[in-house]
Length: 166
Image (tube, rainbow, N blue to C red; front, side, top):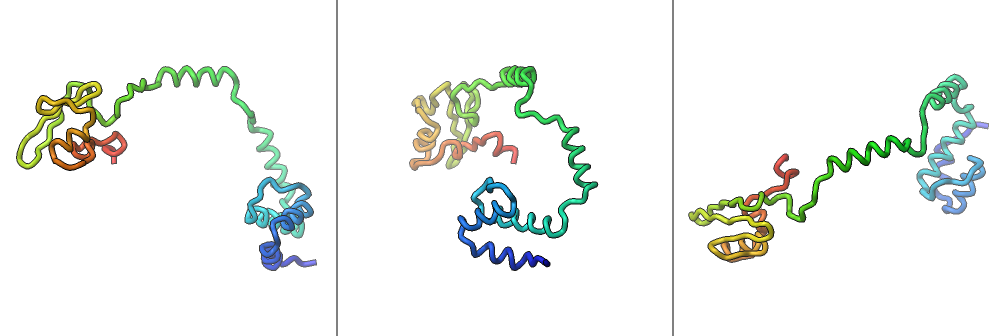
């Protein structure tokens, strides 16, 4: 009996999913692990070809088994390994101050030349000072300067570390 894979695949593509699952079980002798139709069709086609042509050569099968025996397979890493990892993470953890990473340290002035004037905004811990007035956000400062709503970080050219690296 000669198998025509193209015809078989075309026939499987027209099958309803429930029928395809039954066909999978009859060919592969196990229930499918997925409901993905394309995966089931590929797996069935592979199995049909393997059955028709004899599957993998014995030499390849033995080599695969030898490789699997050499591998140190574990579902979980040893306890000592997880303890080392958790200690390393604790040592390198960055303390979240709640401040945006784009902001310079408190007390740093931000300079901006706008319409020919050089302006200075002083960064505080949680506020910004411009011309003796305190603002809660950098966007509020940018709005006071420009008269329209502008993103404060964009207005003052502040970029994140990712953006400045590009």
